[in-house]
Length: 198
Length: 412
Image (cartoon, rainbow over all chains, first blue to last red; front, top):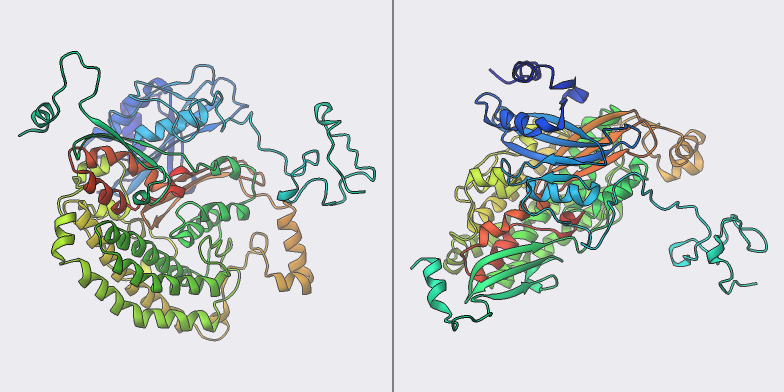
């Protein structure tokens, strides 16, 4: 019998009654959540069960929801049962002050770098990880850049002299005043001689 | 003699010496044999590797962050720069993800044209990887010889989208323009001439004594370990697992094509080479089938190159200048007046080196709330330590090139 979403859901509810929740099927992809203390137990169950056999970790990443107080960070696991060719998406939520989540490295080797990357981006502390260091960014970095409190720069800002990249003082897109003064220039930037052509 | 005993006897340091028994060697980040910007810190005992540690991230460009500020059609150029040896596959994978989120159904002709482009990209990707394995074992000729045909593939891209390496090919819903006659002539030329060259290339390597001695039993991995490490693509198939996204979850009408998935056994460099070669034959086969199906469209159907979804498909530039409706849609799309539906979607395609996944969360705004790229070689590169431990330095170089690591994809 081929594995179906309903059956996986039923098995999970039998094993973890009232703990596994938020079942959804966006675009046919079974998605569910559990308390973060249970992430290892749920995944170990999905891995070991002779019928479920989710033995391939496709992806692991985090998402930052700043407006969800107490569960700002979601850690999303994409698991795949290759034999029956079915995927599930499993989420655990954690607060951002204590983002401690158990590591998956003892189940999947693939989780090693993926967790390091997630730590690097969002600061999720994977408890038990053998080598939880930054992987893509420099080690001296003291913040977690993928969090939503670090927005990318506004592409339309005009106070920055960056003419090689198509914006700045020399090219006038009609967004500066005639005398080239602009109220958005911060105090610290004022007084610099930009050598504007007259 | 075991490795430990060998190590003990190899270097004799006086008691209490603070020197190490092993030598540390930095392979990379800009070593010519690494074929990309990444570093391997190797612990060597003589020429034997005792331990290895990888450093990646030298060309990290924070695509996932940048994508959170961009509308969907502006993310396509970011995907170009992941695996730049087969950027059309990345582009198509991204378009397919967007189409899944937006609920767009593409016409069959578009699907087949996409298959042609994607399989050409796969051939060019495997061609580079396999010929570079040749270079690293000391055979430069094959590399230079097949470059001509990669060039021909790039010329086909050029006819379709105007660029060669970072292609930005296609749009959400289809292609930016129809394939012209030159593109089809060049495709026919490729289909006619390439099989002979591939055969020659195979003859040069696959039963070559030196090549076999250098690659057999080098960098092998068992199917279980490969799965545990999250291998996908030719690297996984060479270990004996027949997982291919094109077959397991078909996209872009791959279900209409007839092809087989080649698998290896031991996962070593030789098997990887053979699997990639066989995949090129299969790709040629798929291109032929798709091209035949494209030719079967007659009349108005033969001119279809995009789905009829004006709210998401960027209209052709010449229409924007001459037709009012196209101008309106162009304005609406560019000025961000069309929001995408809220939702969460994961879509994967079979990239040149594995399962390339796109996980897109939309909160209904103009740009994705979160955009995640599952980059296959970032995931399987962590197995490198296990693959090379205990082998010789020269084997480590071949293992590195036969993994088909692309720094752009690894660092994201």
